Amino acid sequence: MNAGTILHSTPLLDDTIFEDTSILITEHNEKGAMGFVINKLFDRKLNELEEFKHIRPFPLHDGGPVDREHLFFIHQRPDLIKDGTLTHNNIYLGGDFKTAVKLINDRTITEKDVKIFIGYCGWDANELEEEIAEGSWGISETETSFDLTFS
Image 1: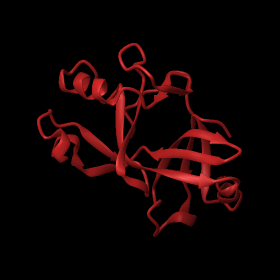
Image 2: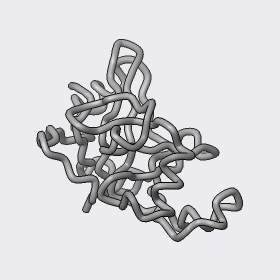
Image 3: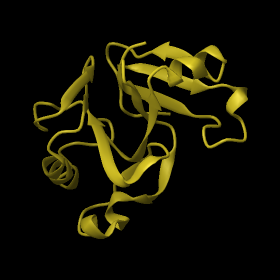
């Protein structure tokens, strides 16, 4: 499995926090895997967080149960947001968050360009592979041209 893989929960995960969940894997190596729930919105918008109360409303996504004290983001605009890490095709993880927020507020970039998450999903070495083998997750690969407007 590579970064860029999308996992879809199976009925084995019904009645858990991962029921009806799709996760974009952004990192996978010998130490484990990291990804973000891409189909669930957080119950507040970015401007509802104290630090960002002066910007325009912008959706936050519920990225997962790990490290819910921090924001993470993926984007497709390395021409505007520097220092991101290429994860797959044209999807970048992180980068200059202050610039990203300014571009969001200026409407230079939109939800099609960037997704901001509270928390993430993480697995230790071989843990995700075991969950896939037991049938908890279905797998699909992302397209070469990937739209960040998730359904």
